[in-house]
Length: 80
Image (spheres, rainbow, N blue to C red):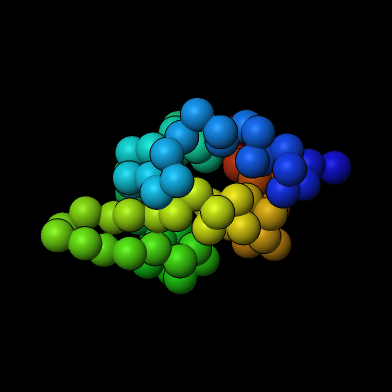
């Protein structure tokens, strides 16, 4: 099973605070609309500074380990 250490290594190339585009890439290249739904659905914590999303990498790791992300991944598998 993938754990926090796995994702810390996987996301090591990314800065400590990522942009919306980097967040999308970290989640496998999801669309911008989907990424914004995740943020606005309060499934992940973020900052909105000067009209730009800023998401600390540790919060991305917390999200990919969350129940919501597990359900989201399952839904994708069903659709594909």
